[in-house]
Image (cartoon, rainbow, N blue to C red):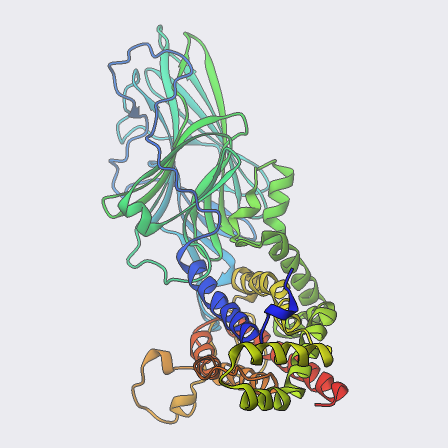
Length: 551
């Protein structure tokens, strides 16, 4: 508990300044360190359910990758959300477009292409140490030429050792279900294991932001997030029972999902300019005349919150909602996101929904903010008396502190009350920052005027007079109208608050609106609009309380 007699005016300003610096530091930490990041780096262990028949023979891919891209047969894939192709030679989904999302806001913009044969593919193959590797002439036979939600497609392949029957299902959104049955055709037992891989080549890595992009998975109920740069330095491996693993972007995810009782070795690695996430199931022995069946799912699509939650519940996928980077304040971010979506459904404009959200949140925190502003207003009111005490006892620090505390007591002012309530608002602010960063509804969502994409920085440029002056400027100066308005409202707020008595602190506080203006000038305009409107509401509240107190 803070004792009033030991908490000076300078202490209050120091605490307030420290909280501002904490906010800036948390921004930086959130960019550098993803939430719930696990540092475990364990070597990949072989997992064996049954003893192999011949342990000296290596597991080899049953399905060869030697066919050229010009000769590889494909199976078309289509529903209302995706369109693409499954490569029948490499047994994987290697082309997929997202039909509900465009690359840009232009009318003739192409659909977002999530997967492509050159840079981003998936593969699901069987490995065997007692089976002949099929030649490129051995192909799957297929029951239909296109996979749709209306009926599954059955693929069959047979060689001298085994027969594989693969049944493919596609739902109305982004989930593929692959059910494989492997039959032993030999007169001796055979050993097999299932291997799935997601391979990606990046020309350039994503820019640093507050949203994790890279490797992600929930293994043994624990979330693991690894940046591309980290995997270039050290591979990651983990044995798991159930779970899912994949590669995530800000809005998109490609992930294999295991059955909950399935054990597998999972790895994230960098190899030959490719980033690869893979899983390998334990080696299983199929007796003569026997068979095994394995079901795997593949999610490839947009990280839509309601859909991700539905998959988690209906398919019993452990913690699948963590594919969306909710950050440290998950318990606030997720309900905030749901509420924002509800407002958006009501008003039909995401920008307006953000303004309403900010207003309602301000009302919810009204009591806490009022106490803070009342304390600051009272301090501002008695500032002339404090200055008189400083002139009278300036050289006697002990007496000055005693007289100042006595003044606070007479005027019924608690210096700590102005800062401590703000601690409650810090997690709320960062939860909102995450909400506006990860929400796919923000992507290409228009507001009014020149803001046609709330997920992008304000496109207007103040320092080029909105494009009328054609001169080169540093990127950090390329800021729009909304960041300038945000900086201005921060400055007004600052003028309404008591100024720090320490000159160094006062100068630092004066610089904060400028620092935040340029820093947030490169952030999503939706976040800047929220902050600006929230500042305006705060200014109105402060003015009302100051008038009420008589400042």
